[in-house]
Image 1 (cartoon, rainbow, N blue to C red):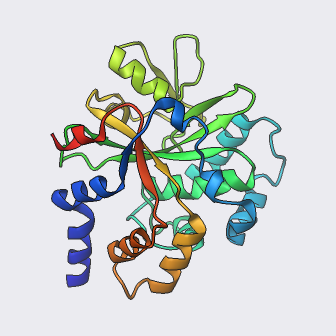
Image 2 (image 1 turned 120 degrees about the vertical axis):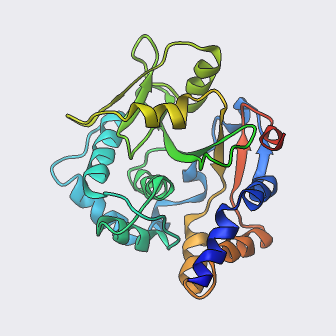
Length: 268
């Protein structure tokens, strides 16, 4: 119990939350992140076998030839088979098992396993997070994905937990950058679930996406193989925040890129 409290302090206490952002954050231009993807640092051969077994089940009838219907089908299957729960700090294959058993998984866990499924389906994917600028300790942030849809020739934001896409007035799916540019310009934004008969949680959408103080950051250079190795070797013997700091000191850590805001606004 004491170890859990210490772990929570290092992960969630707002002073240390800000310190983590200071260590990991970088400013970037929109052009500089255009070609960044999770696939750069995660090869198909390095994704754990459990993902490939589940992927065969997801697409046992047929796999769509186009990217957008493929990621929709994948997202809907995950939503139907994962009810969510406590956040996980486990190797990705173990996290997948726990989530499918109905024993855990928050938005960041879902975004992470979705990344791996996209890699083995040869879809370019990346993960984003959000915070508030200036920092708001009442807002815990959110994680979601963005996929490059070849038939549209563009990045498209997808919220797997919400089976959610965002659109402009012409019903064109929006990228992360496009969404937040429209939020700031107070332009019309449409959103709906692509899962049949699923209602959208409007309050949650406003909190995580449409609040004007929300700032997005791209999670870059995350090596699933590296973190699986460290978590598999040291958990549960060492608190996860120490494991992540070890990876950081070894120069193998991910980092955050802020393409729309100076990340120092968080601390103002």
